[in-house]
Structures are given as structure tokens and as C-alpha cells.
Length: 454
Image 1 (cartoon, rainbow, N blue to C red):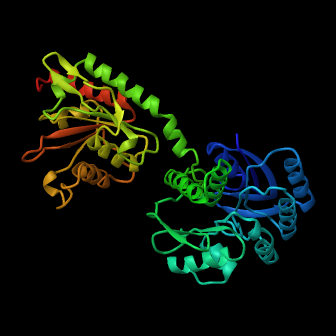
Image 2: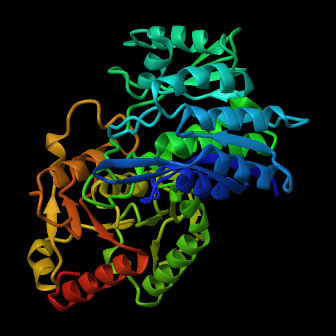
Image 3: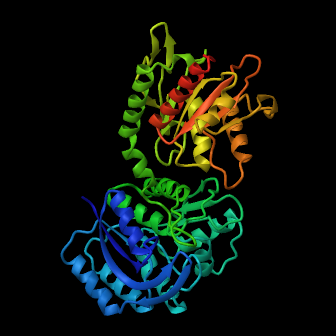
């Protein structure tokens, strides 16, 4: 297993610092060693105090690691003091074969509070920049390191090139603080690459910079090139930001587990779909299966696209013998049911399953008797252009229902529409998992049969 030396400060909330670095390294496939440079006192509300570790203690920690263990990469975050910078640089220069070094120039806490004095900033540039394989400043850090005004991607690129000329082999200048859509600049001094991405609604973003640098270092330890490591680390950060953890009363941490928990759930998602479908076949849902047939879908945790949603390629069909599933569930099998699930999960992430059944006259009256909440949308109100996109109508219709909910209201169990010319009237059943959806569907079938409606 490849190893990663993490040199960083301690965050008791574990959202940033060496705690975030260590989690990220482990999840990215590296074994992390740690050298503590400072003890911070902070939580989700902000930074209260910083207690740097004495340089002789930092030196002793480095010696303990470097004289005993192989180190495939180094990640340097918060260094604490100018004296610690001298110690770290001296120990790294003494190595016979310097591994890749990722230097995250942590100068201030994300929520305010200086983490390195001015003398340390100068020493950082003089002592550690020349040892860095890649430097990862954000906009405020790049401003402080260069003295430039940075208000655009062009300004950021100029700053990145200036910083690269001071010693790092590569610079990744992070543009998340720009007023425009975020653009990161990756440069080796010869070529520059603009890495673009949409701005994510990420209220819980504490530790995103630490996660990015630690993931890059872990991937470099495993032999990836700098551009490859940057791309993979950015993908991990994107997922971690999208699914930040609302812990504490302020800004919560990013969630490094999001992409990995998603992958681990694949088998269980398929198994849960098979089990629920077997019950629908056994208890015969065919009276509620529409002409276009039904599908039952289930999303992975933290799903980000239709390929993260499993459904039945051949749908659930009605035959003279009852309900059948011609093929087992698979990921990416239905864009339509995925559009419903993904739209709902943006607001109600615990609702990861859905199924379509045919609309039956009077279902609005029966649903409350089963303690099921019913809501609907009107296809006639659909904006021009939405129909042209596959799954566009469903995403729009479901979103319009959810947008009309009060902030305190729960999601409906059923979302219906009366159809239009060429479009069958339909109900979508929402639930936490496939069996939850199946139970609602069967309860509706039994109640509608008892009322003589099917």
C-alpha cells in the first residue's frame, strides 16, 4: 500500500486539517502518517485559538516517520510558524529521493483568523515552494502571495504563472472565490489549463481545500501524473461538496465519504429492487400497470445522474398471467424514472425510489384514506422546449409540485398528471426504498379494487 506523509494542523471538528487529510488519504487508497504542526480550537462557527507545536517537536515527529517508514508522497497544509517551515524544509531536503510534495499554503481559516504570520509567508515561498511538486492556493491565498488583484480567470492565471516561477513544478490556482463561475488554473509554466465547472450550492464546505490537496497527494503516491491526480481529486471534491454534512450550528464539513458510500451501495440497490419486484409479481400489480408499462427505480446514495439510478430494462409488464419482469434491474436502465428520483432527491435526499402506475379516476379520494399524500401537475402548463428533452417533462412536473410545497411540508407520496393528447395519465409513487414504494402501490391496488375502480 502506498504511503502519504501528512504535515498539518489539527481540527477538533475533523472537517479540515490532518483529520480531513487522513480520512481522504484512506478513502483514496493511501496509508497516511501524520505530523502535527498546530492545535487549533475551532468548530462550525469559527476559529477561536491556535496553539503552534514547538519546532523541536515537529522535527522529532518528522524524524520518527522518515527514519522508519517509506513515504511515497507528502502533503503539507498548515505549518503554524516560520520556525516550523524551516524544520520541515530541512528534513525534506535531507531526503535522498524527494517524493511528490503537495503544498497547500494555508494562510488563514476559511471562516476567518490568521494561521500564519507575515514572516512565515516569506519563508513559505523561499523554503517550501522550491520543494513543491504542486502548489494549491485559493484566490485569497494567491492574492496574499503575489500582491495582485485577482477578479477574473485571466488575473488568476497570471498569478498562477508568477507563483510557478518561484519554484513549484505545477500550480493549481483554485477559482472558487471568483465572482464568476469557478475556474481553476493548472499550469507548469509552459502551458496553462482552465478547469471549468458549475458553482455548486454547497453551504457545508469546511475542509474542501484540505480534501483536494490530500486526495491529489494520495493519487500522486499511487503513480498518477499531476494532471490525472488533479482531475480525480476535483471529482472527489465535487461529490464531497454536493453532499456536505450539516453538522454543528454553522458551516459543516464536506463529506469525503459521499462517492465511496455510493459505490459500496450498488449491490444492495439491485438486491432491494429484485426483492420489491418479486413481491409486486407475487401479489400482481397488473391492474395498475399502464399501457406504457411500469418501472421501479432506486438511486444510489448521493446519486448525481441517471447512471446512478437502477431500474428494470424491460420494465414491469402486465400479461394474461399477471405481472412480469422480463429482465433484472440494471443501472442506467431508465432515464424517465431516474428523472423523477433525481429531481425529488435534490430536496428530499431520503426519497431515493419511485415507480409509475396508471392514473385511476378517484385515486385522489382514496389516497388520504391510506394516509398517502397526493399532488399533481398539469402538462398544459409545461413551458415550451421542455418536452424536447428526454425526461424533461417529468423533471419539470415533479419540480413544479415540490416548488409549491411550504417549507414545513413533507414530500407527497404520489405525484399525478391527467396526461394529454398522446400521453397517458400517470401516477408516480415516491418512497425511501423499493419495498416502501411497492407497499404503497399494493395498498392502492387493494383499495381501488375494494372500491370497484379497477
